[in-house]
Length: 320
Ligand code: NCD
Image 1 (spheres, rainbow, N blue to C red):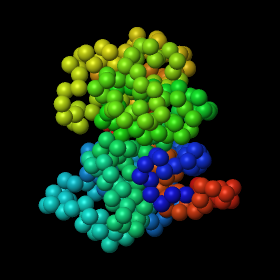
Image 2 (image 1 turned 90 degrees about the vertical axis):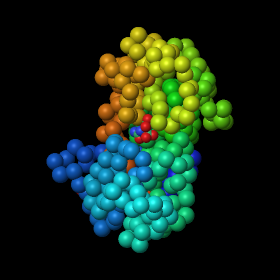
Image 3 (image 1 turned 60 degrees about the vertical axis):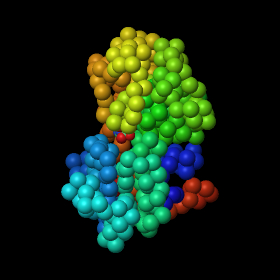
Image 4 (image 1 turned 180 degrees about the vertical axis):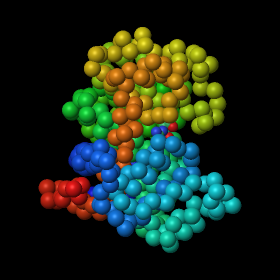
């Protein structure tokens, strides 16, 4: 398989299916009374979070614990980073303590990539700046596949602050690898110029896009990353790009509504829309654990075979 997961673009369609299939076999573990398997017993996973996070950090922690790994949670407040320690020294310290996998979230795009050159541990990108968030894209694919069996020709719109969204980038790349059709929707100021090269369509008219969708994926307005005013007011933004009850009527009956969280209820998604049965937002959170179990298992050598001809010989994960 792969040693690090830094970007979705490292993966082939077969790699992605393998990750999803392995997650499938781990999902059942979460429904047991004793939610633990011994697959990574004796291995050490470090969660290195330099940016705020609720679900991604807890999800990785639970995933590692359910695989019986030892887990260290490290966040900048309360650590020597607040004394000025550099990423490199932090990394070398973790390395010296014998970390087998390092899960990193960082405000700088490319930080996981740099880290992977300093340490011998596997590095998993849990979100780097406005670059990528590959595990989110994989859990999104897993959640979509529960409802829609094939990605080929599947039509998804990713709506909102595409410019600042690592989720939008990773999900667009993942859907394109799997043969899906992506439309990026938002005000022109929030669609980055390079989006044209991602293999996606671009639209500024949400109402026109809704009727042809299988999945409507709403993004949070990332105010903490916006250095200028990209739209006149929050009200104006919601009026044009918010998923309201009346807009939901424009979606086909079967279409799913998704959001990576945290949601700004009433801004990009109306509160009652977020609670509709077709809004699979809490399934995304639940599935994140199985997908991250799959990834930790695969990068730490659970399925040593490469993504090529050895695939058929791979062993199933030890979930008994
Ligand atoms: C996303 C993130 O941090 O990039 N959240 C998440 O990981 N679930 C999206 C966001 O913050 O809007």
